[in-house]
Image (cartoon, rainbow, N blue to C red; front, side):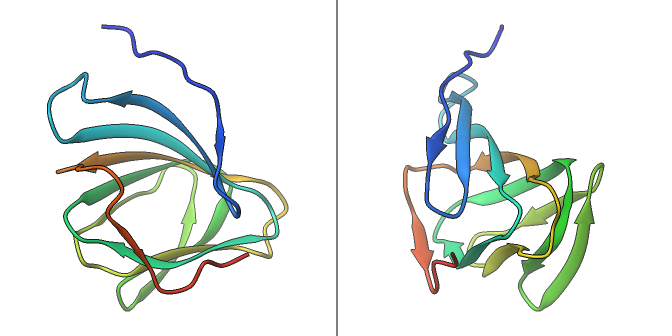
Length: 117
């Protein structure tokens, strides 16, 4: 099955492109997220979904729970439901881009603690 390419959706400090939603099975969403240089995606968590990240391009500080990672191309991470996370690309010279696989996806279940910039 070929995934459908959709348009970018601007979300303030980042933008996303959904690759598939529900076509691979109930509760799954796959998207590409891009955080431009100089931007921060604020702290938030998800009530139900677990997220798997694969870094496609760039480098940034990725906070998951109490850990801050220097995430770069080729790295992979898991963020479980309820874990607070954020992305800081404020000192990056290029966009930070990651593939995000959301498991147990039920629509928008984000709880924002800070929005970033």
